[in-house]
Length: 450
Image (cartoon, rainbow, N blue to C red; front, side):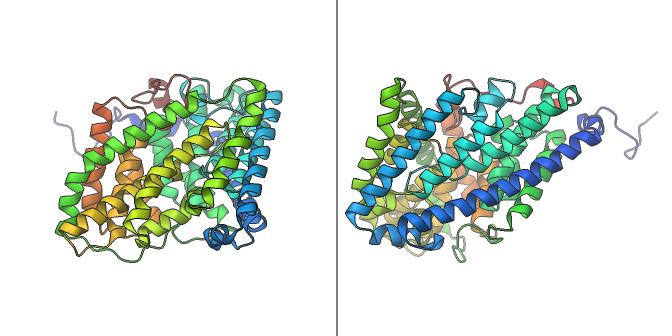
């Protein structure tokens, strides 16, 4: 007998799995989301306070404050940041446990266990040093808070939460942290799924999406409800389409080079106790001295990214910063200082897009430099994260661009990601692991059963 199109289909994997999630599981989803949103709001408030104290400017004018700071102030603030990073590293080592580790390491190589107190301390050190000028991402703090809170709540619920559900909730907590701090609920959920879990399977989507949406809404008590970047309106043109087709593989090469630099920086982290205490101070002092000439290298890259979207710097300065910013970020990472790599990676891509867009405009004028920055930023980010869908959505949410450049963006993203995979490059997150190539290509089978 022929089956009706409207008849039940019990073999669809998602149905049984969604039904298998208990009320306790959904209660944990809500608790993780609320806790992560509050943590993100608290971290952003702390970041604004540190920026105001360090640079004597409101949070939205930090680069102006850094540019106006005296050479003595620049070096002194960065030396203090190095002292804080060194002290944080020392305390975390004394505490022991997994709080000083990476979220990706806990999910991929461990049992998704992160200790709450050490993770929060690591997040505080990260957000304070970023506010003082460290060239690392501010997203690390709320991601750690969300993932560690999820781990703690799962631990308290014992056998009521399976190992697969624990991994899902820890990844969702990390994605919610990114979602809340940058106001990117859909992108945060996709980051958790595509980048951390390696799967967009239907049973995983709803918990991750709900966690990110609720965390973002809670964080609105402090964080703006608008997009992170103000870019105006861009319109697609033939120049951008042709450029995207040409520059996509180049963006992939930039991403591969950046990931390899991250790998080298991670391996260069000091192991001896004395060096661990001295390295952050020396490296941050050098960063302060460099900022006397190039203040744009300081911070997590949001201000510099805004300049790239606006196309307000000269080609020469864009090119210099394209070379300096990844080196400075790698140096901060090698010092042992905690912090994220998402925003520095996006900034690298935006600078690459701005430089190559400037050059292309000499051959085919008419399109704004910011449009090339947007496409290049998405392509480098996608290849470096090994997450083309997540990167595309993140770009659209961060800029509120309305998708006018979606076609050239997807073209460049696809080419860059394919090239990176052909070269067998790890992502920026697996590059920070002791075994940089150990990253699952797909979610473990156990993730597909509650």
